[in-house]
Length: 371
Image (cartoon, rainbow, N blue to C red; front, top):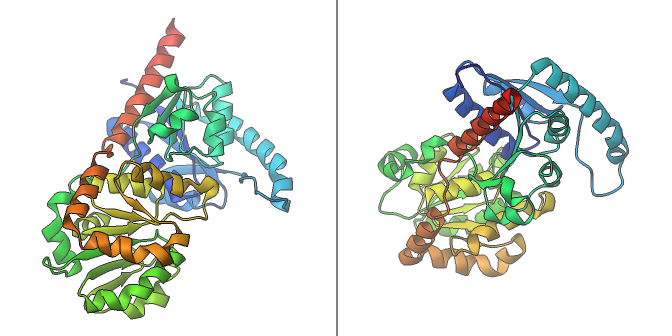
């Protein structure tokens, strides 16, 4: 394809939908520097800030999800949907895309529905092992579905679905060569065990409460702890900074944090799970119970069933965490086993593979127009 290509990407509401879309856009720009790329998101959601920060234009729709109980927002939903469908038609008419890509979240629904009805090639990227309602609806009309887990074959037409994995940061591909740099960066002793705790950019209250219980034990047993508390909780937990415990509001060098760690405690968002597969370190997943359709628990169990991680629900922490976590930390053979097993699940070239599928759709559509 020598000419410029025109692409609309839509998805958002959470980082799990936004960052994959940005990764796909970056890969398209890398291959086709003259390409025109437009994002479409939901007004007042985080994509309206994060996408321009990444250097792309975005337009917002007046749309939100359906609440699980009767609320004023639900009564407004039909009006929001009609408004968003109307604006999606205008966006598509003005931009004239060659392909439209959805990465999940309610913002992608109206846009991909309009695009499909107009015969524009559409591709959806599903990050989770259990698809969200928007992608389940869109899959019927989508031309291609790029998924991260084979479990989605229960929900999507198999002939249209390809397992590509989730886009991950390219700097994670060489984590195993960065240990010395990581130890220096965080001021760690290579002869001591290091634990990395991740609760997401905002933080996870229950994980922070759990680590607080064991903070003194980490210091006493000289276990090095890199504790990412999150923006909402940093002020509350920074008092635990010590010789072996270091708290961080945010980790700017995730590649080095992963490289330093012997064992990782993490939420189980789709992006995090994909990254951890690439990193290949032993993980204890503590899924958030506060996400739609229990996505995180399903993501974690998809890995745990293959003996590639340990999963503990928040309700199990009081009874099981100490034995399971410290048992893992004190067993190098079990660490090695989990690390090797999770690495086998990695799909490190997901972004490139997804853009390969985008190219095929455009070529096929061009061919159909000529014939």
